[in-house]
Length: 264
Image (tube, rainbow, N blue to C red):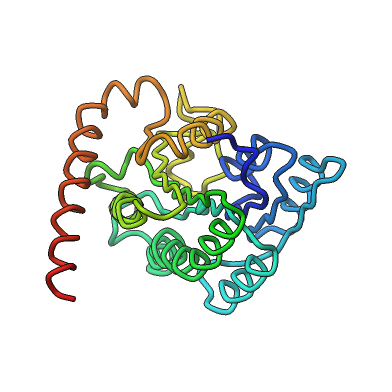
């Protein structure tokens, strides 16, 4: 997939980290709609990625709020996106019983509810524009290497990322005959502003990945793979897990199509 084929992209969580990396690594011909909770940081990213002839818009939004998601979806439809990057994430390090209930709830709302809500409501328009322009739409869901196993002390976060992974895999199979590509991007520990609480700062972990590199790998994998694990060490560790998942999701998709055909 030539990334220049995407005319307009929406990036959630674009005020820093991997979201900023996506904004910086997309071609200058791709117009950008950037969203996040910090307006000042969003504007700084917008200024950083501005280029002659490129349209860059920002919209401050808290994805845990229904009204903010409604406002964002309305703006994205008006913007005419053909690439949706569900990058925003939330999570809290610690025992479930020790973490604030509102933090655990926010992780589910950002990592699960907003991903489903934005994708379901924006995808029809994206597909229609893709058909009209004879191009392809794209959806990237930023999951995590934590999606492949339960992670004590990140129980809710890992569970939501497992949801993201399976959601993207299933959606990719459902859209097999549509002009759209879906990717679950699974980075490991990355140098970001991700706030996991006072006990754990991912960006300080030795060997943490550069967020721009992770974004670049994701963009290169879109249209070529359904699940992409970022980083050579992560790939070596999880490769034996990822390949069977691809075969299983394809086989299950074929079986479910037969079931759907018989139930019509």
